[in-house]
Length: 318
Figure 1 (tube, rainbow, N blue to C red):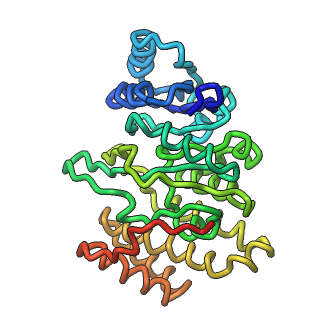
Figure 2 (cartoon, one colour; figure 1 turned 90 degrees about the horizontal axis):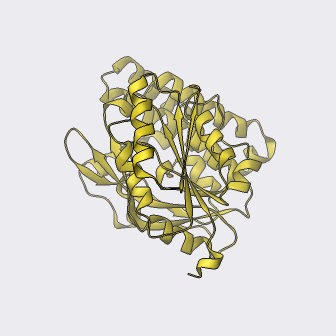
């Protein structure tokens, strides 16, 4: 690639009481083979002074001019990401959560795809799901089918975009309103859907696991089922209440509701919330028995590791 034409990538790293993993996350960003980037590191008002002190000392020790550090009062993840984006100078935004890490080639491979197609507004990669307690690792693409091209419909039916794998066009994100600060669990899905509402906007995919998504107690505690499902339903209702979208994507909207209820019921079941799981499963069946049955069959085959080969293939909707 011609270094004179490389777009500036702004790497957004929100921080909150994250001493345990933050150095590893920042180091993986600094190790990128892609050279034209900045890091916007924002402490969202950590509740412990030692957490803030740790981060400040780390930034001082790293002594890298590409790191721009900010401290702000605590307002939540969406506000912090929006704050960082508005402080950024890049044409493209890459989100890196404080407990995730990247492969050193991640940005380089994503920018190569951006330069091949000017319709692309977002590029993501496969991911390794790392279960910290068990040490078990899984590919995200085995559980969630990846898509590329103009695929608003597919994203509506299932959120297949792991946020720390994504880089997206800043101008399009600003026009879409950035992250909705009212949402705590679905703000990423909401923004990416809005960015893809225009059928001329496409996404691309690097079929390599270029980031590690760490699953541990502090992030699994975010599974507040009623709040999460409420947000999902609110987003889906926005499109159901829009005549143009409802006419064009009526079947996908039903699938989106079923997906939210059914997958929510599975998560509730794993957490021992049997009453919540039953309620969500009933809502899924009531919305569409056939779609619920299909989800159950697919989930069964995933669990016994008899995944059809076509599930692992990338579907191109371009």
